[in-house]
Length: 556
Image 1 (cartoon, rainbow, N blue to C red):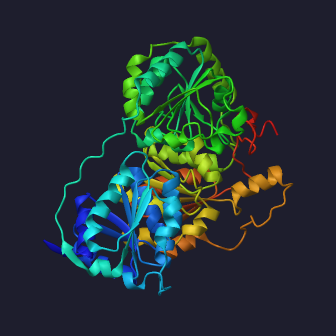
Image 2 (tube, helix red, strand yellow):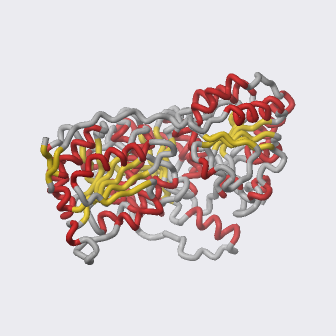
Image 3 (cartoon, rainbow, N blue to C red):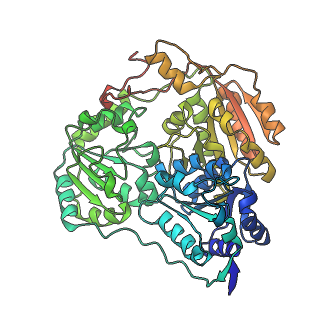
């Protein structure tokens, strides 16, 4: 049958099972939006307050559901406003397809109104990107974009479509998508045997779980391995929920704001099994002194990550779930009683702790955990509140902490929470933000209010840029350059002005009551938690120091 380009875009989205898209219209993309209007009963469109909110919403949708998130934007500034969200998804391996429109093909390269080379702009931050100048290639390009976004290590793909291509007509034939196969081609028997040998001979094994294990849905297999060899384990920020946060073998997060127990255990172990982590600088600290007593096994789907930051003794390239399904039956059941006892003692000796006599960030996070019984989807922005959410909420399952780990994007959280709630309407979705981050995306409260999307925005308001101030306190002799936000912005009034219920709390008792009221509302709500400007995230490792040099308030 004959269809125009806009009809082809919508039909391809329907082929891929897309039920929700996030975006903002404009002149170049009008044809696609006109067609979207005709299919509003099949594909829900969420009009965000800003294109960046749309990209973050698509990201949050993808992280929460495991499906491809889709965002739309017009040419020029519409397209460039997606860039931060695309880069966020790229750094954290999130499957996303961004569809932009551009000026007509005859106007390309002529500095036309609202023209931008978005393909060139996004080349370093996408798995792949396209500009489709021939309508006959449009359907296959969109289909290929969805495959690339999902296969192997996921990531964002951009498809840019000139306006005249959205109006041009060509023959269209529907195609049923093929399932995406898991990457097993490079799993070698000799690598499995070498890993088995190292595991079977280890006296002090430790497991470090990264975001790749979440993406692979390898929870069952990771827990099976840890139980079989009775190895303690920790996670990176992106690996939360693969190990149950309540498990006796769990020691907490690793790295700059990881627990002393996890950092010491990595330093003291004789075998480190790393599952889907990329050895980020925030995890390894001083790379030359990272896990120097250990042999290292690295399992990852992306060969570019192996030996990139840390040289390892054994590597297996492939989908983590598939690798562990082959590896787990090969390893011997083990007990490491002396090592197990040592790690337990570390856990008991160095617990996470904070001032219990007043409302703090950790206290607010623990009240959220109690009110949700650990079953919510927690979204965060970036900063102190992000680390407190990682440290004090016990994640039972993967896909329940959505946060910008690689790019560290302030303003990520509220848009991502809206996307997560659209993808998982039956889950309680709470975004934990700092006041600095909230200022960057507070306009998305209007989106939540317009559609009555019942996300809960918890703003930990210390009237400063908390993480930057913490560094200024510890390393810059308390020179607080441009980090004090002690002005007259009333977040509760802002929420109410944008159509959202607002509450303010100053005590832990008030917070416990407010979070339960917000959940019961089943409407969008904001809770402003007023905390002290000098609360800090501990433990901490100075930048560039080895992770065993972790310190806390007692050490200071």
